[in-house]
Length: 323
Image 1 (cartoon, one colour):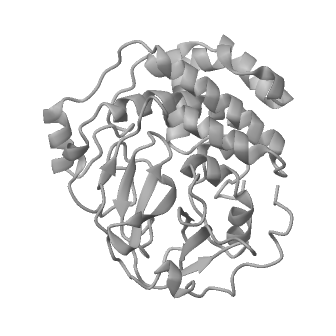
Image 2: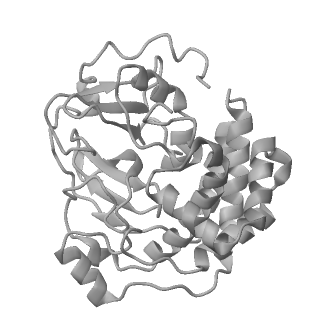
Image 3: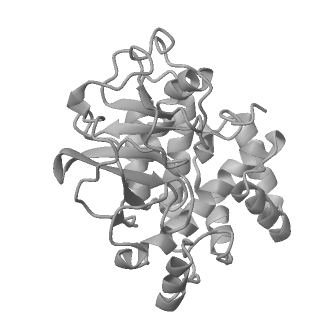
């Protein structure tokens, strides 16, 4: 699973990177959009295109092509979903008052639109690139009753997916992404906060980020936006601050040998880490796709004892419990 050469070296140990990356701007915030909601016209199509590009010649080419097919099916499933429910302005304001995301899956009730998305994913995905386990999962899900599907969705959202159902959970995760991305896109970004986020969790749905993107602008140091693993919302977050515990103390960085556009921000306080992609080094980055194409960094950082909540499409590959 590890790309060639990735075990050779990190950067020179747990030190801050060169000043050119401005990681000594402890806790600094550049001025930029505090919240960016997903663009329904492009969110999944752009992700699929990036995955298609990344897959060519990659050691994980078969895996990335399978995910490309899944994301392309997400784009198709999004096009004609039935009307779903959405919190109104009063509910969004109340959620913000109690410091809770308005689309938090724990408190916002799911409607059937996610199961419609799942059905369409199963029907439209290109099964020629699916491994046997994924084909079996597809068949099982197509025959499952609504109660079993809802129970599996609950286990996924609670982080309690068993190893034997990981393949099915990936399809379920993809369908939930379709439903939650649509809901998030219809919110008012201004109602979700007007400044930097105090939390590393998504202001729209409360889910963890899949990675962060450092882009030019605001100040000479640029700014960081975290990207949600569920609803594709992006939100501004301080540079050099742990996304898990919020600490700005004992933050260090790792990178693969020869890589300049990707680093892991590691927190010695809670042993959590997150990925950072630098747009100045690779401007075509799509946070979710590029996260999947850089699992070698996850392996290396994991060997040092750091962990994170894994990308939902690698369930069973990156289990933080070690199971």
